[in-house]
Structures are given as C-alpha cells and as structure tokens.
Length: 482
View 1 (cartoon, helix red, strand yellow):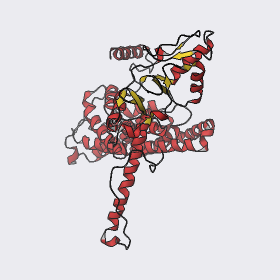
View 2 (cartoon, rainbow, N blue to C red):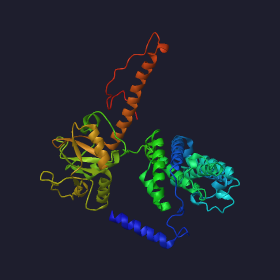
View 3 (cartoon, helix red, strand yellow):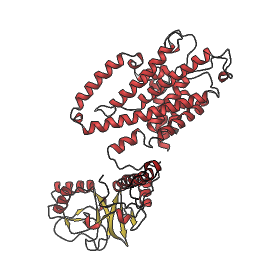
View 4 (cartoon, rainbow, N blue to C red):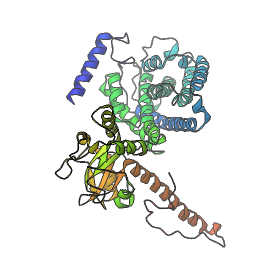
C-alpha cells in the first residue's frame, strides 16, 4: 500500500512539473463547474444512465462478435491489410463530421466545458442547436461502430477513451435538449426550482454523467468510474448524480449479461477465469472431476536420469509434474513446474559435469538422498515446491471452486493420507461451470415445451413426454464437448 501511495505521488508530481498537456492540470480534460444541479435533474441523469447502459451493452456485444468472427475467418491471415483498410475507412468517415475529425481527448474536453453565455457558435451557440444535437447523436452511432471494428485489430486499440467520447456525446446532446426545453418553457412546473436570472441547465455536466455511464456499462466498473470522474471535476457536489447514473447504467447492462468488455475478451480467448463477483453453485465432489493419478505424469524423488527428464520435457504437454516417493506408493513429496525443470536440465546439459546418465534428485529426506555414484547429481530440489496446496478426496466442488477464486492458484492436488490421488486445474472448474450452464439450459427447455403443449389450445394426440428431473452429472459421456 505504501509503495502504491509513493508511486502515485511521484507520478502526480512528475505530471505537474512536466505539464505535458500545456494546461497546468494533471489530466487533459479536467474541468471545473461553477453551477450546481437541482433535484429535478436526477430524472434526466437516470435517463442518460438507461440509454448509455443499452448502448454500452450493444457496443460490447458487437465488438466481441466481430472479434470472434475475425478469429475464425480468413481475415486473421490478412492482419496488416485489415488495418490499412480500416484506417482508410475511418479517415473517410471521420472527415464528414467535425466531431469525428477531432481527436477524442480534445472532443471530450470540449464536451465537458461549461458555457459562459457569451459564445455565439459551436456547442454553446443558440443558432444551430438542433443541428449540433443531431450531429452529436450521429457521431455517437458512428463511433460505436468504428470502435467495435477497431478493437481486435493488430494495432493497440482500446475501449476506455472511445467509450468516454461516446457517452459524453450522448450526454451533451441530451443536456442541450433539456436546456432548450427550459429556455422555451421556463414556466413548466418541472423547472420551478430554476432561478430566472441564473442559467439552470449545464450541458457539460450531462456530458460528464454520460461519459461515466458509458464507462460503467462497457467495463462494469462502478466505484473506479466515480472516483475518476470526481478527479476530473474536483467537485464533490457532482458525485451523487454520477453515482446514480453509473448504478443505473451498470444495472441495465447487467440485465443482459454480467460480463463486461474485458471479461468477454477473457472468455473469448478461453482463459481460465473465475469472476470474484459471481457465485458458482456446482454439484458433485472433487473425485468426480479430478484427473486420476494413473493418468498423470509424475516424477520420482530418485531414480530419474537427465536423459529421462529431457525426454519427459520433450514429450509431455503438461505444465508441471507432481513429485512422488515412488510410483508404487504415490506418496506426494512436492510439485515442480515444467519451466523450472527445463531450466535446470538445460543448465546441466551445458555443464561439463553432467552426462545423460547423471542421476536427478527432486526431494529431501532420509530415504530420498541422491544415490552415491561417480556421476555428478543434478539437483532439482531448490525448484521443487515441497508444500503444494492439497485437498482431501471427496471435497465438495463448491469449496474447490472457492479455493481457486480466493487463492488464485492454477492447480490443486488431491491426496488421501499423503498419497496422491489426482489433480484438478482451474480449467477443469471453468469447464464444469460452462457445462452445467448448458445442462441446466437444456433441462429447462422440455418442461417449458410440455407446459405449452398442456394448454387447451395447444393439446395434441401425442403430448411431449415429461422429463425426469434430477441433478445433472458433472462429467459424463453424454455431456457436450467444450
């Protein structure tokens, strides 16, 4: 914690001294508002949260769909050409709109800016306000499409700043509409709290709320987004509207799926990820899920040679190996990763002190000391984890999943009285979660069809058979392959 605080302080001081944005501020679009907000505006902030929640959800789905299509199509073989085509298309489309031509940092800064009342054109002008609103909305749609296409290209292309620009455009357009309503219908009861001699609506605040809402819907972050926006405005009074809009936006996006943009990329690439925000209710025990010891590749504490270890590294696809006393007793002594084993074996082969027949030692103990031979022993013991995380056989699978989530380990060894029975990896847990989700979805469909067939207007001579309800197995021969 102290290191993080020191690094953050050093970074802030460095930015202040260097002034890279030429505005004397720590961020390129830091703004300060002189006006406050009224209670009736909360309804408008909620509306912005609803709209940005839907837009962010659609942007995530479109982006992930295009990324998946890119991976399984011939486009993956033409990465450079795709970048050139997308860059040319983006330049041509962006040239048509002044809001797309500007870089996103400048655009967001202008959208956040508060109008002084002396401007006659641009975002603060009164002449072509309807045209500006329409341009901002069209810009938002085009930016969603362009962002979805750009993410996943063979160039660095992120989602953070484009999402802020899209949300700020939507919020600014909405704020300009509300401002026009107030100017034309100031006598409405809705605007009764507004003072006649002071501007009541600040479109820049709506842009700020829209940017925060869009970020929340795409990334599913809440507290972080609120803190970021508070740092941008340096005004505690706008925390409540931002919190409200962020909560609404994330809730709307969560109604269509719990995963944000980054979680979607993790699932798309098949990484073994267990979310800390999601509770997993699984059925079964560790014995049903583990890979049994008879199917595993293990190394013995003694008896291995440098040649056998080299062949094991060359032929085995596993990323690590349990260390046992002997293959007969299977008494667990530790665990060594494949990378560490390969490093030690490579060093031994380079050294002139070892040959292919050199014995290898993997564990300490009176019964596993290196054999006394004329050859130099290859000592793997410093790289062996002598206390790997283990669980007893028959442990509930929910406890196993919680262990993976809380400890962040990649594997768990199953033992019984010190004897190795099997191993469970995080990929096994992720596979079970996906499999049981599919099984429950399939189990819910036949009863639903049977209910429809039982309706008076839907009765037939051969009704659908009732399904036997029960707990689906974790792994079976009839389970769908992942």
